[in-house]
Amino acid sequence: MDKNSKQNGNDTQSQQEKEKQIIIKLREKLEKLLSGDEGVDVIVEKEKPLLYQVVVMKGDNKEFRNYKQDLLISEAQKPRVPLVVIEVKNANKQKSKKGSSPTTHAILTYSMKALKIKEIYPYLRYGLLIVGEKRIVPRFFTHNFGLLGGFDFAMAMENMDDENEVKRLSEVVKKQIETARHLWEILSKEIKDIKVFQTLVKTE
Image 1 (cartoon, rainbow, N blue to C red):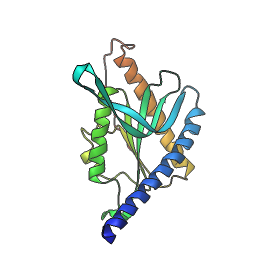
Image 2 (cartoon, rainbow, N blue to C red):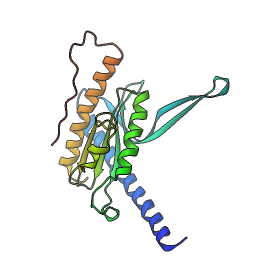
Image 3 (cartoon, one colour):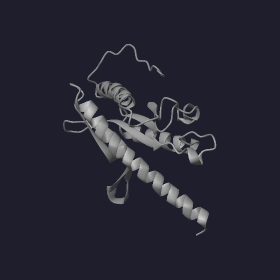
Image 4 (tube, rainbow, N blue to C red):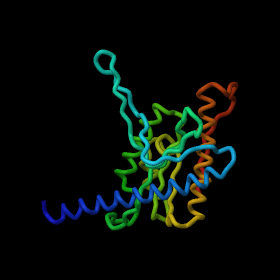
């Protein structure tokens, strides 16, 4: 193995470790903020697997395939219905010529991953959190499958230690929880005689 390959491997491992630490801290902060609000009643878990495919094998045996989610927000009461997923990316400016993250490949990959999971959980809200960036890069909107079909929300968080930024994330998540619950009610036919349905786009 040459020096460049070894260095790239070390950089990747270091990046993954940084993201794991970010996820651990965010889980704690989010759970604290969300649990303090009456009526939210959710739990926040890290690296929790979610089903994305069921394959029927010979003899009617079934193979269940899943993806691990960085952060998963579910109903606190059993059955713990998954409501919101947050994919966390740590901005790595050293590897990007444009100095912005995530890459086109990452956006395409995770947007497709979101669509696969929504085939099983059609009410689920799927989001992208970019830590260490001031803004959401334009290519996110270009390469998010179906624009409104893969990622439902995204946020750039320049400083994870800024309590105002974490609070903003919690407010975004609360709205997504509300939307997921509303979609659940529609899909389970708890809400009937719907005359208007619309999707609105909001940016800040």
